[in-house]
Length: 314
Length: 321
Image (cartoon, each protein chain N blue to C red):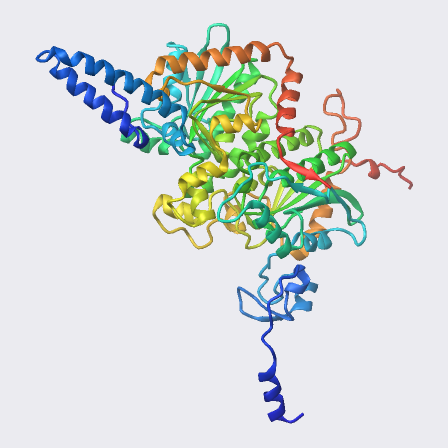
């Protein structure tokens, strides 16, 4: 084919009609991606290998719920719970479009049914309950289904005495379910109270972005709270605050590092270290510390694990 | 406050005009006694209009009544429930938020701990109270009182009338979200009964932070929503003039929320709204509280906790494949 022919063929090409197909997140990524922070062009497969963290400037790209689970769970150990739950549109909500249509559109874009995926898996061999939110589905908003899935996961953790890990990424409560969405704040917090009283561990991981009703409920109730570098986390959005107080906010306001400085999170952990850190924390808290706080004398010394008490051979 | 005439709202204008006509005629009554018949007729018309107006309110009208500047606030209720009520101050950690009023009230049959949001009456007051938007310190003050109530086995009554939690820079730095979350968490685990009343605006998480209760009641014209209708209109419609539509779509009035099964009781208000008669409003709410406490106080501590958890566990609308 000579050059002329090539140009002629190119012109002849019929206009591509846009076909709306479900876009899974993998397909969505082109071959190359540009880092939002350092503008470096990154080869997508390298980026995926590095868990969607820019190898040059450590910028953390937003990731979906399935990618998150893939990164945290040991290969092949994840079992999903309650995959069939969908909202029943209790208010018959309609703004410029109906809620039902908006849900369909959200599912088409994200390939998910709801904004959270929950299930059971192993993390470095430690059996755990994991829930991951997906900002790509309906802004990660919490409605009845997200609330119910998280509560069921919490109840499962309580029943089987497993540690609970929730990865948040959400714009807040879902307006289209009105008062039902608001009540999910109370519902999830109340379930976590039971878990906490049973002496079980809950680690909350805050990723870009975590706001509103999600921050004001389960996201901030972790025994340990971990934030991802650069993630924006807060209750009210930046614009709302600026409009209220009528002044400019510092550039790093509501970032993970800012929250760390203000005592709101325990640590900021890079995504590439997250799994190891989680496994360490789970192992650290596993087994009785001071076995029974109510008995008069501790049955085993402070901090000693059952697994450590092996017969000493000299 | 009650001696002042209620300020009419937008939708009350026709009523207001009629009232002015009657007043004008009454002024002339001494010179022209034959006007008495006209006045009677107008009075009758006025009453008819009043009744029909208030029985056909749009959700937007309820919102306006709920936000009426003369609407009774927490302090007005506490004073009328118990004139010797004692206010308690401070979160013990460095601040006393005037937007959250806490104290001890003797209701007669029951001694209770009260916690309520406060909007402020004068301009200065309003500014101090951030127009009823509590700071994290306000929620921590409320939490302190919840723990106090549990220690002494006293029931808790909360009053909700807030546009939401304060969205400020300091509020974020002091972890507004955590303050709310911890309140939800701790309220769900209390062993003393909690009754919450939405008396005006129930604005989002800032309202729920004192609203996790065994029984949630709402005054007839109060509203309760996940986001302010203004916020909803600007996000979903991208237009500030769609507030009425947002009010309708969110189903935020007391009657609608009762039908959705999220709250337990709607407390009637004097005709035209609670601001028309503070004493009657206070008496109505007090009666409703005592009725609820009569049942709740019969439960054991463990049952109270189980009850509150069960109540919120059930809320949600979904289908399972």
